[in-house]
Length: 106
Picture 1 (cartoon, rainbow, N blue to C red):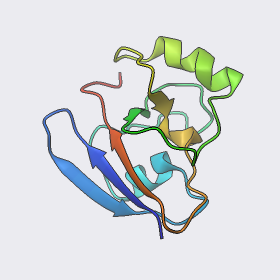
Picture 2: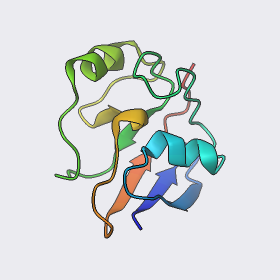
Picture 3: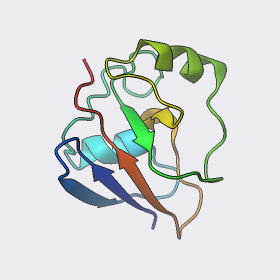
């Protein structure tokens, strides 16, 4: 099962085992990870599940046009490694991912 480490702005961390084909947003919400809001339920229309992907990975496809557009409107500044966690779906059982949760989502 993929493992995701959510690192909050204050440095605290939460590690979540995430089933393959489950978005990082859904895994975060299901495990009450602080800082992930997910207001739109995963349709990439609100930007409240913004994260910074900690390292370069080929695990995920590049952002779609819709995700790319929404990343321009997130509450925290967009960075080169910004992604919407609702669009990040692990495909490999052995994945170990680290994402940083911004200080604010709304």
